[in-house]
Length: 128
Image (cartoon, rainbow, N blue to C red; front, side, top):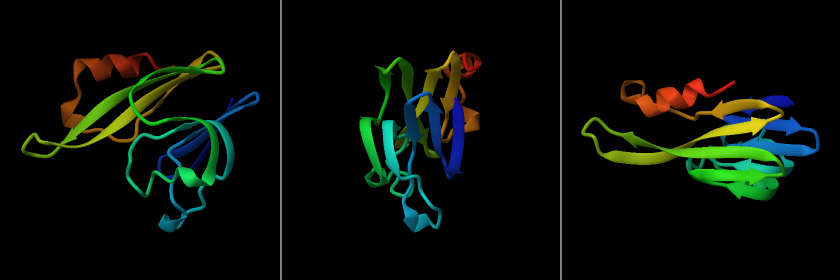
């Protein structure tokens, strides 16, 4: 398995003949985004700076919570609700765990440290 970081929260994971791209961003932010083909494209947040899927020729796009299996790769997505100081939900993003080559990795875009629950603590403990 090879993991490459492109900047921001964008990563590319290559396992054998399978390519996964996470959170491709717009070139408008001043960095060079990944281009080309991906078997899987994961989007954590619908923020325009981080969500430019137009650069990627993706076989399968995952944009939200759920359990997925594509080409023997297992992906779990869990919704995270970000709240402001008054407790109002201001946005939703997705945390992904990806099981590939016997290793489980986590792609966690953002979190509010003060709001960690027992669920998230258990989630993190499951990561390789």
